[in-house]
Length: 106
Image (cartoon, rainbow, N blue to C red; front, side, top):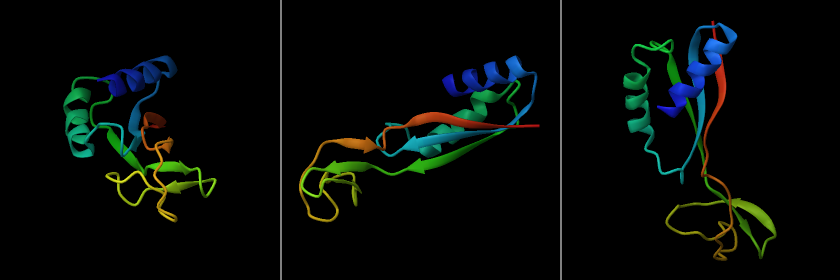
């Protein structure tokens, strides 16, 4: 509902019709992509966003490896270890996002 609220507020402020909402969704956001897509359609019913698309960009989990001194994508979210050297790490750089990044307007 908050995604619809944010997009609807912006559409009303600018006096435009929204065709699509672009969202970045991290693997650790706690949100299931398929459920979000299904809920978006129901949530946008009877609003100015009815008929618009929700376009989701999947964001992988990236952690900082203290041994390599660089950011590394995780090979699996079950193992928080550097994909190059195997050093355990808990410093998440990206992958928790749930953010609206763009609106396509008519």
